[in-house]
Structure formats: C-alpha cells, structure tokens
Length: 164
Image 1 (tube, rainbow, N blue to C red):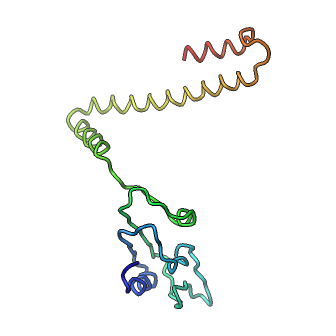
Image 2 (image 1 turned 60 degrees about the vertical axis):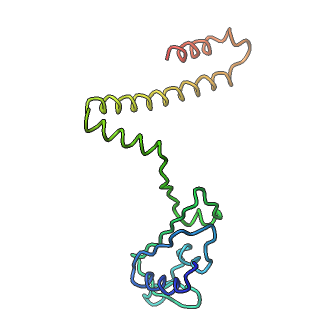
Image 3 (image 1 turned 180 degrees about the vertical axis):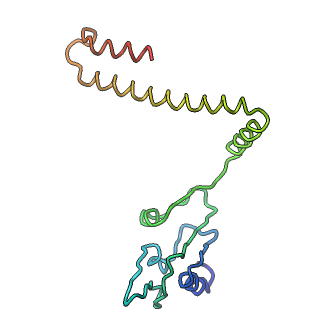
C-alpha cells in the first residue's frame, strides 16, 4: 500500500484477470480495496465491473488477490478474516525436522514408515474411542439418580470404559 502506483497495477490485474500480490503487509489494509474484498461486482448490460476509488474497472473472473505478511500473529479486523482466507505457512524448526525425518525413513526403511503410519492411525482411532467412552460416562453420571454405587447401568458403563 506504500507504492503510489499500486492502484494502477491493481486496476490492470482486475481488468485482465492477472493475480495480484501485496507483499509484506502490516495490519493496515487500505480501504480502497474493500470493494474487491467484498466482491462488490456489478453487472450492467452484460458488463461486469467493480468500483476502485473513483473508477469503474472491468472485472475478470480469473482475478485473484494475495497478501503476504511477515507478522507471526497478525491482528486483522473480523471483517478481513471473514472476507479472506488466512493460511499460516510458518514452519518451525522442529516441525521441519520431523517432516524431513519422515521422508528419510520412508526412503531408507519403508517397513518402519508403514509401522509408523499404522500407529498414527491406531492412535487416532483410540482417541475417538476414548472421547466416545468419556461422553457416555459423563452422560450416565449426569442422568444418574440416587446412590451412584447402586446404579447398575452406571457401574457397567464405568467397568466397560475402564476395560477399554
């Protein structure tokens, strides 16, 4: 937004359907691009256009706009979050090391990689099962009346959950 010619280049991109990239933006987004973010495209007599500043610019459906920022945790308004798709591409050193290790193991020892994938799947299934057991137990506790130790359904559910 600091470049004085950005609006001229944005108009050309909108008109010809080229992608447009705003690099290293901060938390301020110029309101002149609000019609694009709102997708406020008007059609009159078969001509689709958008109003940028005081100009009507022909709209090409191929147009895409991208923002990049170096901020690790940007704070944009709720409207901006609603109008855009935020993708966090930040990579931590540990995450990258894990990914590289997985690639090397898959190449060097495919059998170990298959075991790891099976363990990950089993872990996911076990988490789902644990959640179901917790929900069942909590529901039984919420609807239990009287002495909890005398409630046979609750005791059976507790034993089943414990065995699982």
